[in-house]
Amino acid sequence: MLAAAVGAAVLGPISGCGLFGDEEEKAPPPAPDPLAPLLTEALSLAGQHEAAITAFPVLADRLTPVAQAHREHATALTKVIKAPAPSASASPDPSASPTPPGGDAKSTLAALRSAEVKGQKSAAQACQAAPADRAALLGSIAAARATHLEVVR
Image 1 (cartoon, rainbow, N blue to C red):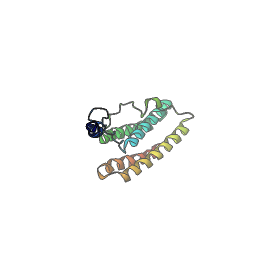
Image 2 (image 1 turned 180 degrees about the horizontal axis):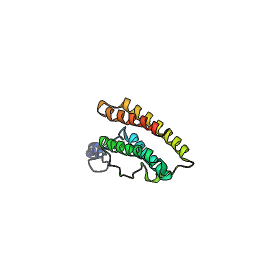
Image 3 (image 1 turned 120 degrees about the vertical axis):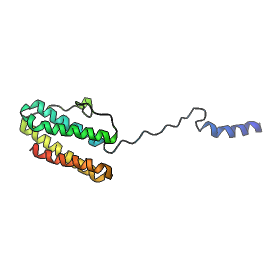
Image 4 (image 1 turned 180 degrees about the vertical axis):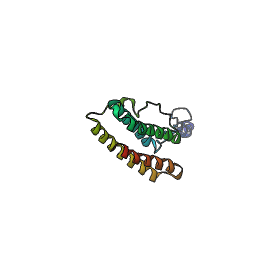
C-alpha cells in the first residue's frame, strides 16, 4: 500500500506536464502587428476611391492617382509587417467591399474627404508611436494622405 501511494505521488506531477501527450503546450499566436490596421485602412481607402471612380467616371483623372497611392502604401506596409501581399483588387474584407457611393459626385468627394481625414490622423498617430525603422514610411503615408485632402476637396 505504501508503494502504491509513493508511486501515485511520483506519477501525479508527471502526468500533468504533458509528458504523456495529454496536455500539449501550444505557443500563443503572435500578436498582430500594430501596423495591420493601417494596412487595412489603406486597402479600404483604395477601394473607396475605386468605387467612386466606377460610380462617377468623370472623377477618374482626379481619384485614380490617389487610389494607386493607397495601393502602393498597402504594398509597402505588407512588406514591413510581412503580411501576405494584397491582390490588385483586394479589400480588407471581401464581404465588406466598398459599396458604390450614393448621391452625386460632390457628396462622394465629401465622403472621401472625411475618410482621408480619418486616415491621415491614424497614419500620423502611427508614425508618432512607431519605432525609428518604421517612422519614415509612416510619415510618408501621413504626408501623402494630407495631400489627398486637396485632391478630394
